[in-house]
Image (cartoon, rainbow, N blue to C red; front, side, top):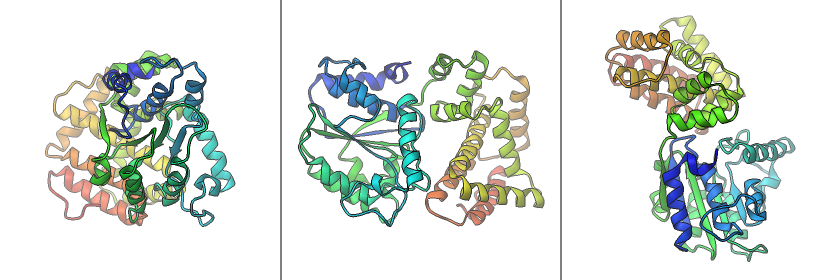
Amino acid sequence: MIASNVQPKVWSRLRKIKSSDKIGTAYLFSGSSGSGKEWLAVEFSKLINCETNNNDLCSSCSSCVKLSKLQHENLHCIFPMPASSKSKIGADPIKALSSDDFDFYISSLEQKSKNPFHKVQIPNARRITIDSIRFLRKSIYLKSQAPGRKIVIIFEAHLLSEGAGESANALLKILEEPPNNTSIILVTDKKSKLPLTISSRCQNIVFPNISLETAREILESEGVNNSKSMQLAIFANGNMSLAKELLSKEIDEPILEGQKIINEMITLDKLAWNNTINNFSMLAFRNPKDFIFKINLAQMWINLAFKSKNAETLNVDDLILIDTFKKFNDKHPKANLYGINQLLEELIQALSRNLYMPLVMINLLISIQTFLKGKEPEVII
């Protein structure tokens, strides 16, 4: 499947921008996770630099091929990076990565060139570092050796604001004095975390969730059978990154897996609580990516329970699953499911804030019990 079919309205707008010859210096691609923002950022770069010079991309010219592989001379990608004592002011932070992290980074780029929904997540990378923006400033004003327009894509752009926000301030200076013949594309799931001084200087392009039918078609085009592709599409709720990760982990029953995690979090039992706190705290320390994945599963299950509570169509054929959501809502008729989902989102954010995870988990479990009763917790993570 091609990007224009995944987000047709967004792609139509991007084509109009290209055809008008009024390409801006800064864009903000925002929307929920897995909605194709990163994919279309790369595709927009291809469209702008396609050698055929028409209002669509060919995907076969030298420029399109290089951009598809994220290896074009005019493309500068910025990803969250781990802190490094080896980094030098003005130097490429990629060169400061450890040998293992560098190999991981190269492998992730290769995976992303094949799977546009793949997330490049270097271990312990929790912010867009000031070194990345300094290196960008040093290189972006230089004259390009290749024809076409220079493109900067900042992935997980909300992480510019982590720490003291020095990276966001450094980028703001570039946006205030943008280099010629250059477009900067910020991509984020969390637009509200970007400073207004930055977002106001960008043309905002909002990405809606990928439709259920489109998600199913994407999965089926990769050889997933109809039944499993439908369940993955429903459970992922338009998040193709999550759907692809579910597929890669070969989880046959993602809804049941999400239910299992929720049950662990809501069971009122001292031993069960201790196990849940210890297991999730250890997972957050040893494998943050898997920790986030499990929390995403719990969020997706709560989303389905919320739809069931509001009598929305679940598109689930399994009557047992439908009955499971009904029983959950009957047992907790006053539950604030939106509040629980927010707690889970804040649990993910606690990772980047380096909070003490056992305490965070205790607060989470207590707050969930309060939300299940329809009350507001006194302590929220």
